[in-house]
Length: 440
Length: 156
View 1: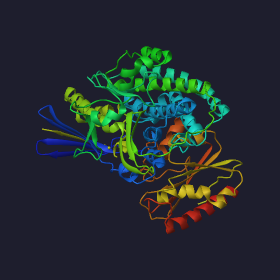
View 2 (view 1 turned 30 degrees about the vertical axis):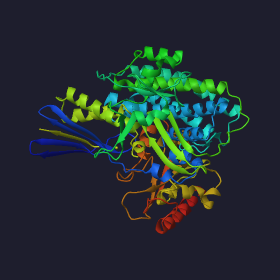
View 3 (view 1 turned 120 degrees about the vertical axis):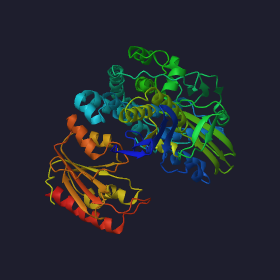
View 4 (view 1 turned 180 degrees about the vertical axis):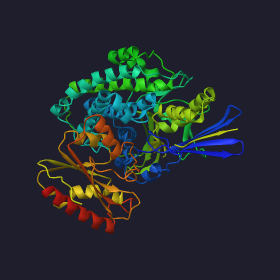
């Protein structure tokens, strides 16, 4: 567990405060704030995890290797990488995965959402609302709540294990489908725990809804995938609340990457239009109508409206998505019939393909070019945290300005909370936190 | 130092990353023929997922954790702790790439009444945590000694 060490440095009239490593985020990074005469002058979310060069070392590799290589980008959301890569390669080779194989892909993705969302909501984010510092303190006051969270997360893990072979970096996914598909009875064995977890998720959402949420709203441009048939997870069109509606192969014309000196992760933002927000809040605001009646009812009972612009309430939205994920898992398992073959054969042909799925933190984009022999000539992968970085900086800018009168200690804690709202995956995006406040 | 691990049912949790040189020594222990030949011993591998570790030990009994240590002590130093009785040196588990490490798992399990009856730690100070599957020679020799100690403690 990383400890929060605080260092104060006085430089002339400027005051600099540092928190060497931000706690309870995935990866390592820092934050620098510059305040002059009560006005925020600069906010820099500094990501210093070393670059990981995945896109470079994919070049020259066989196209079938891309899902397993890219899954190593993240231990929390490997499915996002495996399926993004698979979709892109399948598009190039003219293969469409449908029916039960597509349903199994959606099922394993629900496992990833459950694992990631429950981990973040209870282990990383919930302690913020108690100023408790860690889930250990939370467990002391509300042991049953934490026990239930652990059980829900395990239910997500089990989905990953049965379908993927193991919960971290699953090994059973391949181009065209799976190496081996589960027996009907193997999936049905998961149902009892999934049904218990669905109700536990509803109860947990109600518990979290009683937290005291800071009043803070932002005028976000939400960006998410949208599918006419379902709450988008596996793919869809690129859609925003400000008029974007594009096929995924237009992604590079919509979002551009930029290198900023203070971050080893590229910043990705809307071409000519600034920041946008990906992830649970974006999906909820753009695709609410496609949630199930139970998830919608639970959201309303928790005090969420049809729209939510308060990033501190993203913990509520994550739990709404957990309810939805358990319902989807139940639905898919009950309708499951073993397919004739675990995978569709995918033969290489030269071309460029695109894949994007809704990782727990938002759209995870892949683009590959391969030759006739299936050798990867070029690749581009954009993790959701790369897009959210500049949006986090904008949130922090406005949050610090509105609370500039707080003591440095309180301001730093508030900033860390605001960053955790995004559940940033720094390891993914470096492909991040010290908080450094400078006042004069 | 001999640990009273004798029990009719023992769970060995082998922690580590086999692709990061000495960080893989826990996995090396769990796959060693001397360990595999022990009866009454269940073995699982863990990549450092604290919650999976808690879930594995919540069913009680005697649990042994085997892991690499990176404390700054001389490479090859052996560690043995009764995690429920002995004070854990404060510098032993500071560095963790995972947010919930062994001390946090123990504290959380205590609050949630999920601790096993006995919980022991066997470890070796690593030397090289770079990329690769080989244990460094000095650490490998120390790990072999630790394996003999685990076998002796389990069989006693």
